[in-house]
Amino acid sequence: MDNNKPTIGVALSGSGSRLVFYIGFLEALDEAGIKVDYIAACSGGSVVAAAYACGQMQELKNTIFTLDKKTFFSYLKRGKGGLYNLDKIEEQFRTFTNGLRFEDVKPLMGFVAADLESGKQVVMSMGDIARAARISCSLPALCEPVRWGGMTLIDGGLLSIIPVDVVKDAGMDITIGINMRGTKHLFTNRQIALKKIFNIFKKAFLIDYLEKALDAILPDPDDYDLEEKPGMLKILNKSMDIAIEANKKDYSKILECDLMISPNITKFRLKNIEKLNQQLLELGRKTAQDNIPKILELTEKKKKATQVPIKQQT
Image (cartoon, rainbow, N blue to C red):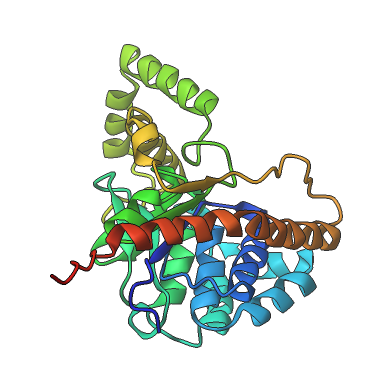
């Protein structure tokens, strides 16, 4: 074991249906003998990270390449606070984690979520890996939020789509980010702008006041407080407000890292899913192979920088 080897942390951005890319990327790093010491992930990236750390990458790959649309939608049940409940998806995730906890696996991991109540980022790095992956994949309004540690959590991409800051906070010597979306967070700038206009409209026409008055007279049985089970529209509204605040941050500093990888995925369209997955797998492998020389160069530079020069004997 090389005790002088710099530690490597990778930040996987939200990937949606393109998570197969990460399988190819991590497989190629393994084959090149490059050990990843820490993975920060949100959304689909957390599913691949979980399978990788639990030694179930082949199982995940087999499932993805044989999963048809009918089977996928059979996992989705009607939810509260979101269109879908992901309980059955979480059960499927457990086949990739073997019931393991964060404390049981290497590399170390941190899955990113957003707390609806405080609007702050939450890093899940202890406890049930499958539950944390499910939370990190819970898109606001589309999937119902999940209670965890007294908080109401949804997809961490709401605040930042590439969790580079989580890798830095973990104390890694080398930080690598992968940008699969090209946006700062889940919502686009256009969506953020529309929500700002809507907020101005609400304030001007006292809509908030009218909503509270109506709630007092005719409470909606599906619209709970955040501490209970919030309604879908309330979730979406709160999520957009959180994103507006997050959009004010200087992301050029937040996303600073030793190597940012932005694969060209614009040409991939969801037509033939099997062909698409194969293309993404190959792109992930090629992207890793293209960047392995850069990673090795960074490793050598960091190693030299931390070496203590031996004083010449007199």
